[in-house]
Image 1 (cartoon, chains in turn orange, red):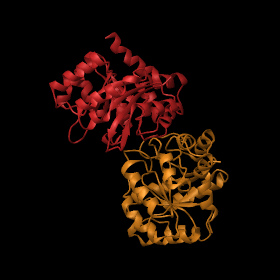
Image 2 (cartoon, chains in turn orange, brown; image 1 turned 90 degrees about the vertical axis):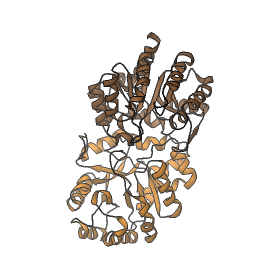
Image 3 (cartoon, chains in turn cyan, blue; image 1 turned 60 degrees about the vertical axis):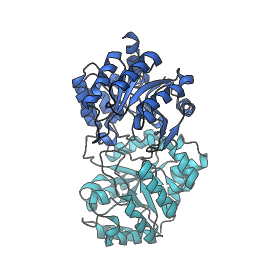
Image 4 (cartoon, chains in turn red, orange; image 1 turned 135 degrees about the vertical axis):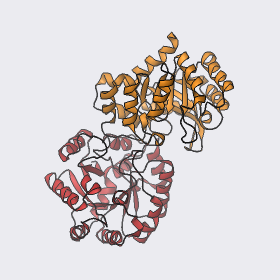
Length: 251
Length: 248
């Protein structure tokens, strides 16, 4: 069983990219053995969180066995009240925040705090990508400001996403070490033997598989876990168990 | 068969690496890599002469698996290092030149670098250039007969991750090759490069021990290109380039 916490559909604005419609994403999942993806409309990232969330829910309705919704909002775009309404009786989902793309600082926004509080109550995991995809041409978030927010919402589980190596990984390691309500997603983790080092340091329970399908080659996400020299039960936790447990506790 | 055109050995505090030849061989064995072209980190970021001496000593027992680059961080040390480079190629079997762009401090198309590029062209050995596509174009204009491998095909911070720009440089200049290693696994990246410049101009690299060679190999094998094209990228092209020195 392979669950994937980090997938998208829609238009990729920066260069032509094939196969980003939902049906093509499913085909990529089939080719790479990914059973189910938490999927997120790119429209909600770039132009319209309200309409984007609706698209996401429609796509999940069309492919109920393959997708779960990843919902988002911006404090400065329509969609906040609609998201609050969805979260009153939420489907199995995650909330994904894009401060870089929505132009805000995560620690300065009352509406963000309210959503984080609700996610804590409902046990909805919150995914915060350090970057949209692992590309050096895209901006990265200031993760230094995250610690205060994570500490302020101990009942909310934060998934730190799209982190690669060196400086950025040291910050993520600090957050993992300091806050037990955090996990690290694996889609941008490319360093040699990094999975082994991190599992050795924190245990496999702190890591969640992500592929960033279809923006990144989805074969790489599962491969980096399968090829890692860690016990099979640790691989299972990263591939699906940890995320299943998080979603399983949703209220 | 896999020949890796981009491997590091030695020590760097910056990328938190301290790796010996034996460990690289073990990693290569695990990933199925037959031969590696290797560049020394000390030469790249600290002391050119010391670093190139270190790699010569470090890989002495593994010359069937490891092919050394002569590595320079700058051309500004001039004639002394140029003569050292010449000696390492003619006397010690070094088969490449590694250069590294450090913007804004120094770019690889710095005039002081040109004698090294000319010498590599004369030797018919490849130059692994960690740089932007624009810098490779500049070097190609100045020394058209050089064999340039654009490291990471633009997927590095110096080149702002712009692999489209590196592909365009390779399309414009037939002596520019593209090295596949990087942290980026963008959908369609390899397919696009193959369509634009042909598989004959693309070389597999891993950036071992910084990056995971198993994933870097999969970047090629899991792309939607033919097996023949994959074989060219994984070893055929670099093997062909390395033979040019023998026939020069």
